[in-house]
Length: 254
Picture 1 (cartoon, rainbow, N blue to C red):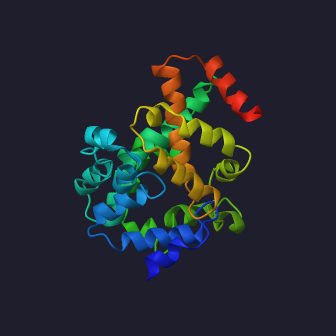
Picture 2 (tube, rainbow, N blue to C red; picture 1 turned 120 degrees about the horizontal axis):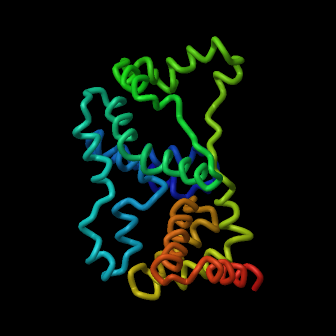
């Protein structure tokens, strides 16, 4: 009863929207095992195995169906040198999301401007020291960063210490529904992957429609597909950055 009801509620965009949390919790409740649940949680706004099966045409699924992205999460989680589920999650993030996403983005943006960035919280001695702390000093109920907040009170105002996480997202979800919808839809529906029968045109259209009508917030999935198509144009078709930008501008001005 709950699952179908949640799919009918309009999905607003933003950082940790309540309806998104409820949909995630409902989906996770149907799974068995901490490793599988954690993997599904990390893939919630992206393409999990079921989402890929819908997206891929028979040709694409035959070539890639045996690959399961969740394995890259469940593997480290299962073999983490820790017993506590919180520490298993932290270890998994440390060997997957941290180097391949957060640090990679920071490095690219700083290097593009000739800057050298260092993350003081990632000093290896500090990391090794804090990794041995019990999880109750890291998270307590719904309270996150327990020991860090306690230390921060010595240096920062209480309203800063207690402030909720803000997130770093641009209003991409809104742009994809409004001013960038034409560019997005034309690019994705005529992409190499659709033309070659790797992605289902109907599945891509469904993602666009559900996002535009606010039935679901698909902006992360659509962003991934857009980046994939532009990457293919630049590095496989070798179209050149000027050509790609000109094509995108032509769609925007049409």
